[in-house]
Length: 131
Image (cartoon, rainbow, N blue to C red):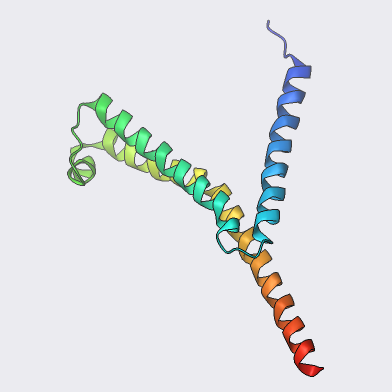
């Protein structure tokens, strides 16, 4: 029986949690910048990675099944050819949704920070006008 290497597992868990916390802190920092584009860097990177992963899954799966992808023809034929192709499409959609969870979190952080920043700016404008 093979035992678990607990120190390595604990290290990997803390490394993963640290990476997630670091990405969230970086997103908050970038979202609070004056530039509109600074806060969109991480969501764009995250969305691009999800597209690359799903595209890679589709190309690999259809190449292994012998189906030639030509534009949308390959995807349209996937529903007609049988369950294996339907499974490929469904698993690609699930992977796309799974890989876009960080994108959604980054966008929510961006919207909340920008909304708070815009509210603060409006209050400052009103206080200057009141003087």
